[in-house]
Length: 194
Image 1: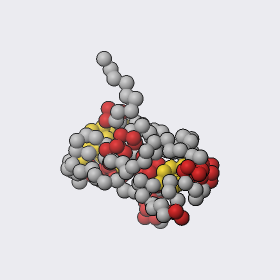
Image 2: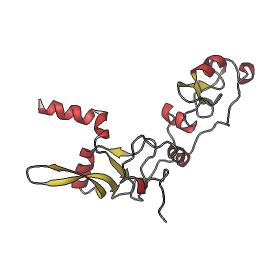
Image 3: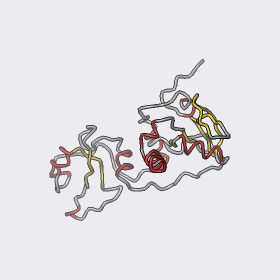
Image 4: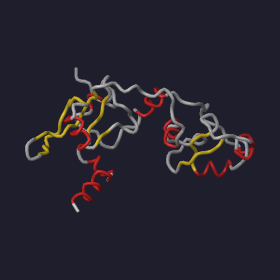
């Protein structure tokens, strides 16, 4: 019974809302901005115990074993540098991130799907250069017609993004919760003191 509870706890995404640790690369930059690189407190404690990370900030809470007490890490930095990928995977999430979570025809947010600019029935392929984020309304309006026949226009040229470009776009979308110990390591709206 206890083992099942532990497995459920670790697999439950709610665990990340309970004292997550911000994970920084060895250069003190987050591994990713969107989604923000976070570990559960259990993973952060394990990595600290195995000396794979340096703990930079901690929560006030303490976890205990029969022989040890440790404060829960809130910011950790990897001891070994992880080289960022140069190529960006073509995923729905990365596509929406490239297009800043807005329809590339009308600019609306929400209710997004994706659209082939040159429809597949007309020889269009599924690639960075032919697929855009689109709201359902614009996607239905365009259908399997060309842009010209549909009367729609792209808001910006489409192309495959570079990984650094996606990281920078991701910084525009901070998560709903930023712990105060993370702010010095993130560059979103942090007020600088004179």
